Length: 507
Image (cartoon, rainbow, N blue to C red):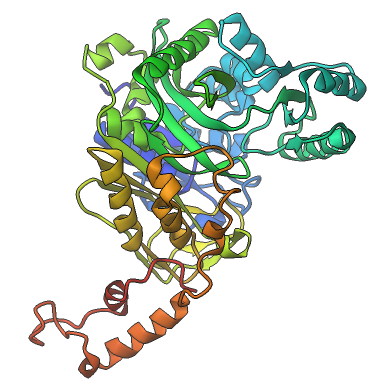
């Protein structure tokens, strides 16, 4: 189905590349936009048409509704795909897109406003009969909110109503800390979202973070595409995701899926979305929020269902019915998929963000390995945007095999020139508790050594120096050709690096 001739992708990096690929498979012309800082980026060359936005910061470029709409007009785009982040959950942007006579590939502004507010989302979840975390979503004053916290019982979470990604959220263990934490969260929320409304919830702990991928069409139908396990987090930001969850039974999967579908139907939602839950040790689940967009971790759902979510998003936006799109196919989960988010950062130094030029990139390949990447050798990683470089996804018949495949793929990943978290990700996947599926939201807090790494580990820079020396001196033992007979080209430094078992992140 080809409902549009030309679609603008209002994003950058790996998600822009991934959406462009999906559009190309549908025979749709893709339009990409880019800032001055992204003039030489991978995503600029991923589309059929590239339109400059100017500016370097997100505010000057990818967050400018006016510039995005002007780019759509100049390029003749009929629809806009927002990806994730930036304007993807901005209801005012959706309204402006539709006012300009264009199609927004996502939910409408009304549903986005309802579900984008944690307060409003709690209300509609309760109306739809979906279990919610005990708490209060509205209070006349800070003192009233404190009184509610006393009734709920400490520890509690204070959260920004308009928040996401852990911004504007604080854990409060004792009553004496409440007002200070509330004020700090409010300041952060106002800076991040321009909205200081706060809510207070009981802390469900220990718990897993389980989310349900949903699709809904414009005709009142909706379907669950099952759960994703997202419990490995740092400061409420996901690090590793997998599907299916190692602990979700068929019965729990059905109950959570039914609840998620009931909620999106209740608000008249359309297109792709994710309903997030906390699940306690007794198997009880509680509604957290709805992400009204395509998720970073959507590839693991694609792996276990065999569906292309971007294709389905585009078709739904064009008016297609879910019943026709799925055509009775079996979408039961099969196999196991894991995704690792590869960042330019230094976990060993408090996850310090990194910037600079990637002098060499080698990404893994092979059966059951997928890389959604936004970088190549020579890419300049700037301070202006999120430092995620790529997503590494593996798929295997079972979880044990998927874990082994992920370790091997991480060993084969090279992002040289700036530090990355590749070594850290490998340590997490090799951790016995991860292998056992013994996960909860404080998994990384309980194992700080995973971020620090072994104290006696040889620095990557030493491996780089050794590899360079060996490459420049073939007599030192490095073969000079693929066949080892000297008749072919000499191996690169980085081929030597692979042999020396270097895991990304050398600076």
